[in-house]
Image (tube, rainbow over all chains, first blue to last red; front, side):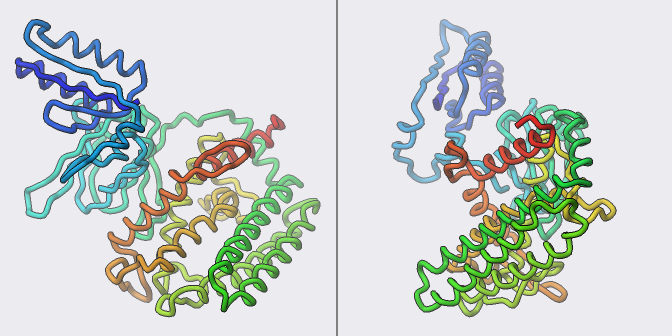
Length: 96
Length: 333
C-alpha cells in the first residue's frame, strides 16, 4: 500500500519536525508538504502518532491517504515528476 | 534498495537519523543532497573516491546494511559488515570438513555441472534467432553438454584432489567453445578472442569483468547471510586470502552476467563513451558502469522467475540455494 501524507501546518518548528518524521519513515518528498511511499501498517501507526503529537488540532490539517500500488501505477505524471518505481519501493538500485 | 555512489567526491554521512548523501554538482562548491531512511536500504556500494563518516558506518551496521568498496573494475575490495558472525559456527565447521571429503566432490560437480548446463542453454537461445549460424551453435551446444556429462561421471570420486585438474580442464575447454560462439554472434565491431582480465583487452570483456565483480559481491553476501565462510572453498585453491568459496558457489550464476552483457552488445546499447583505453587494455567508464548496473540489477533482482515452486528474483533464488547448501552441510535437509 502506498501511503500519501499531506499537511498544512502553521507552526514552522512543528512543520519541519513533521517533515523530518516523514523522511525518517522512508517516504519520498513529492511536494513541499506532500510525502508518499510504501509503508507497513505499524509504520503508519507510529508516524500518525508522531505527527498527531506535533500539530495544533484547531488550525492544522493532516491527511493520510492509502492507495493501492496498482492505482498509483495508473497515475499520469508530467514533467519532473517523481520516479514511479522509487516511490512504490520497486526500484532496487539507485545510482548517484 | 541498493545505493551506488558513483560520483567522484560524494560524501555519505548521517543527518536526523537519515543517510545524507552529498553529491558534488557541476560547479565548484555546489552540491546536491539526498536523504534515505536506513530501513529502506539493503546495501551501499562505493565505486569511486568519496568519503564516509563513522556515523554512517555505525548506522549501516545497526541496520545490517553492507557497505561495499569496489575498485575501478567493479571487483569488490572489501566490505564493512557487522561483527556478529551470523547463523551457527556449526555450518562453518562442517564446511571445513566437507572441503576434505567426498562432499566437496558432490557439490563441485553439481555447481560446475550447472554452469555448463546454463552455458549450453545460452548457446541454444542464441541459435533461435541466428539461422545462418545454426549448425555451429548447435554443435557448440552439443559439445558443452557432452563436457557436462564428463563432469557428472566424476560425482562419486572420493576426494577432490584427484579430479581437480580434470575439472579445471573440462571447464576451460567448455569456456573456450562457449565464448567463441558468443563472440561469433556479436556485431563484427565487438567480436573478441577469448577471455581477458586485468585488464580486459576489449569492451565485451570489460563489461563481463565488471558484471562478475558485481556478482562476486552478491554471492559473498548470500554466503555470509547463510552462515557460510566465503574463504573455505572446495575446488578453488586455498591461496592466501582467496575467497575461494565465492569462486566455487558463483559458477552456476555466471551465465546470467554473460547473457545480460551479451544483450547490451547485441541490442547495440554500448557506445564509445562507455569504455576508455587504459594501459594494455580497456576499462569501463561511468556511463558504461551505470548501463550495466541498471541492466544487471533488473535481471538479477527485479525480474521474477519460477524457481522451486515460487515466483522470485534470481538473486533470491541464489540466496535460497545458499541456505539449502548450508542446511545440507549440517544434515538439516
